[in-house]
Image (cartoon, rainbow, N blue to C red):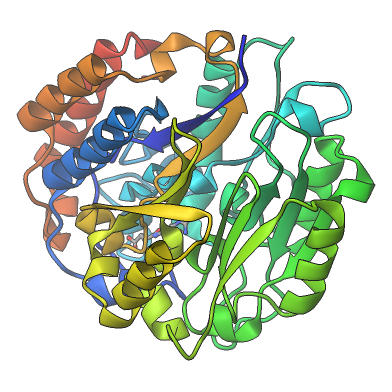
Length: 416
Ligand code: SUG
C-alpha cells in the first residue's frame, strides 16, 4: 500500500456567520456584522474538493460540528435562549471548517514508532474555537482508528496550539523521512500570538520525532502585527519546496541555512517585500494557497480568486511560472465566503500522509459523494444568516436538522 498525501477539507457548516470573533484576523474584523451565505459557502468548499479530485489529488472530509454548541453553553451556565450577547456568537461559529487548525500531523516516516501521529489542537486562545477540540478528537478517533497505522493524541494542555497551520514539513517526497518545522509566535504587536513555542515542543515530543530533524522558528512580529495570525498566511511547504514571504520569519536566513543542511534537496521560493508587500500577501492570501504535487510530479498552487485580483500578487505569480522554478502551474478557486472570515484554500484542509486503505472510508471523498453532499447542502443549509438570526430558535433547529441530514448521508450518525 502506498503512502500518499490526502487533503481532508472541513465541510462548511450551516451556521457559518460573520461575528468578527478573531482579534488579529483582519478579514474576520472587516466582515463583522455582514450577512453570511452558508449554502453558498458550503458549495464553494465542495467545489474546491471536486476541483482537487479532478486534478488527481486524494480528498478526505470532516463534518461540521454541533452548532449551537448547547453543551458548551450549559457548561458556562447558560443556554441558547439566555446566552449573553458576548457568548452567543461563539457558540454558533462554524470555525471547525478551517481544518488546518484541527490537528498537527507527523507522517509515519518521521516518527520513531513508524506510525502517523496526530495531535488535536486546543485552539485555546480564541473562545469561539476553544470548544472545537472534543468533536475534532471524536472524528479523528473514528477516521484514524487503526492503531497499527495511527496514534491520535488529545490536545496538549496549558499552551496555545493551533495545529497544522503553524507546522511545515520538508522532505524529498511525501513518503520519505522529512524535517518538520514548528513555527510559533513570540510577539504580535497589538494582536495575540496563537501558537506557543511550548505547545509546539510538546507536540514534537508526543510524535516521537527525531530531535535532530526538527526545527523551531519564530514568526516575525511584523507578520503577526500585519494580520498573519497563523504561519500559513505567509508560508507554505510541499515535499522539497518552501514558498514564503520575505518577512514571514524572525530569522529567515538562519532557518533557511538549517533547512539546506538537513534537506539538501530543498528549494526555497521567497517572495520579496518589494515585489509583494506583507499587506498584499495577507489581503490576497497568496501563501494560503494549497501547494500540491500533481500526478505528473510537477507542483501547482491552488489559489483564492483574491490572489488573481491583487495586481502585485498576480504579476509576481505569472513571472514565477514563466521562469524555471519548481512551481509550474496556477489554479484559482472561489472560496469567498470562507475568505471573508480569514480562511483561504489551505485553511480549509488538513494534510495527512497515509495509506488511504488504513482510513475509515466514511471520511474519504469521491465525486459521487461530493455530488450527494452538494444536494443536501442545497436542500437544507440556510441561504443567509444576519446577526439577529442567531437569536431565532427556528434557525437553531434548521442548523441542527441540516447537520443531522448530512451525518446520516455519510453514515456518521454516531457523531450526532
Ligand atoms: O481562527 N476565523 C478563523 C480563520 C482560520 C484560518 N486558518 C488558517 N489560517 N489556517 C480564525 O481566525 C472567524 C470567525 C468569526 O469571526 O466569526 C475565524 O474564526
